[in-house]
Amino acid sequence: SAVISQKPSRDICQRGTSLTIQCQVDSQVTMMFWYRQQPGQSLTLIATANQGSEATYESGFVIDKFPISRPNLTFSTLTVSNMSPEDSSIYLCSVGTRGYNEQFFGPGTRLTVL
Amino acid sequence: AQSVTQPDIHITVSEGASLELRCNYSYGATPYLFWYVQSPGQGLQLLLKYFSGDTLVQGIKGFEAEFKRSQSSFNLRKPSVHWSDAAEYFCAVGVGRSQGNLIFGKGTKLSVKP
Image 1: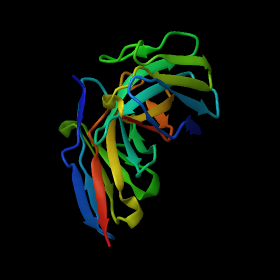
Image 2: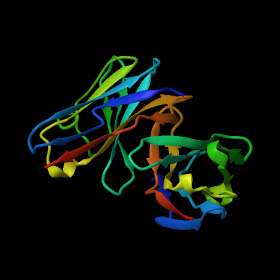
Image 3: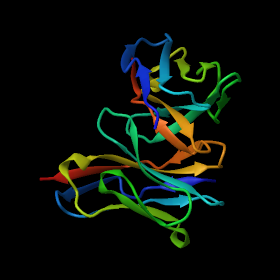
């Protein structure tokens, strides 16, 4: 399994600002994923990030709000733009293996928007 | 549409007692099924997975799960619960072999009484 780290681990932000979350993997992986876990809820996939191509967003998520970068096979960033209190969530990245259905998750970034 | 149902939001068991967490899925093709555990303030850890073959799968920490196609279920079991098992448990189904999308249930919170 891959070792995944995320920065920051938590942050408190003001409404209208943006936050960029970093995800670093200790090995090269083809596919990385970004999830959101709203308070008391399950995980929802935001987008799939492939190196060298545009991220693929799930229904209800748009690039202007959640721009993603994937500059190489070990790193990705997710930006939460123009934040509102509704964006308060845990954001998790994961990496895919074995046909991409088996995923390993990072520790998450706990975001609070005031 | 694909979905995962975990009917129990919160379960409390005594330490040393047996445990069964229920999971039902809705998916038209052969499912790839997973159980993840999330301890407070932590990311998700993969407990076990089912791709094919033997319908009884063994995982880490003494957990096992049984895939029953006729019941569209993938229940998680442990014969003797330890206090350290207190956490939130998520069942997930992998949608499409190369799509990498995991559909998660809403989770079951497990509390352990001493």
